Image 1: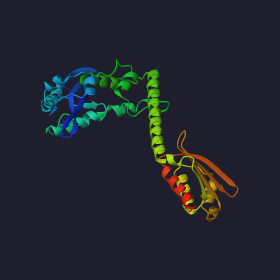
Image 2: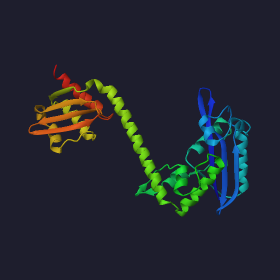
Image 3: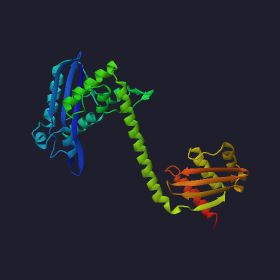
Length: 314
């Protein structure tokens, strides 16, 4: 027998902090593709006052409904009785780690102790997500319930009702076991997630560039040169080893020799359209140039080289 569980939760204030607590829970028991029984209840957490706007909007629940609901202890007792009445070995499935984590933390918060019927869980989110292959690799190791419903062609959007979501989880599990992926829908989800990742990467890059601009903007258009002192060579080789600059092999080898001080390094700072430093190394007949974008990984070493160059003029 398989039991599928879902829960909705919200933060309850305790002093100066919030504790995540269940406000509803739903379970459905399935045996041989038949619904054996189901359970659903709202829950009134200890010290509950009001729902957050986001949870109220998503769940369509009201403060009054939660205030009139049975408390955590009563609901857990009922769930234990519900599962024990099935009188059959079972596998308990949830979606993601949050429901289980919140349930266990709330049991401690409410002084309930162990919930005997809810001890072993299988997280279907990660398990099923890892089965969804797109272009030869896992599309995402954490697909949402909405994503999986869409990929398997199951109904409408997630309702954020604990019992209905538990039913959705069962239907997704069945579809996963039968391999009923709709390829064109998977492509839409995979491309949508790829775009989200790319957009997030660009936002992060822009944020980092803004920080670096604020940190180094006063260097703009400054230019300096110095000999390839051992301290300069050490910093350049450090950047090379970390993959932050790319020196030709023979030039990299020459930098390690004692004769490299006869060479010259030239640096110029540019801040637009993005922060970078133009590097040029002249060593014997070799001339190497690279526009080095400033990052958190390389900016410290580049500034140290700059200070050595500036210090050599004094």
